[in-house]
Length: 71
Image (cartoon, rainbow, N blue to C red; front, side):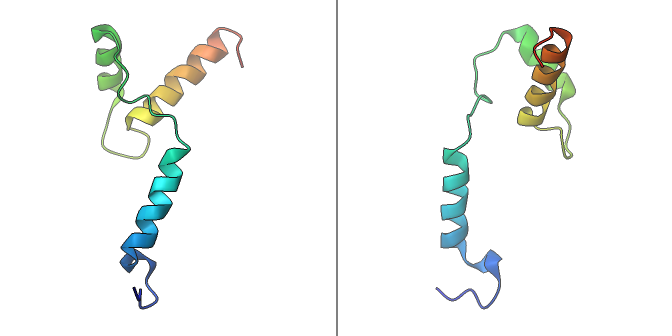
């Protein structure tokens, strides 16, 4: 497929890159959490950079680790 110089038009290539990237990630967004934990995560979610589940969980874990001398 010709991408005419625009990477965004090469869907096959972009899809392969996305599959490779995702194969290296650990997914915990679908974890079965308690209702209390779900409410906390939901209260921290927003529609901007850093408001997704992964960013929220990163912040929670780093804060916990710092508080508990794990970092």
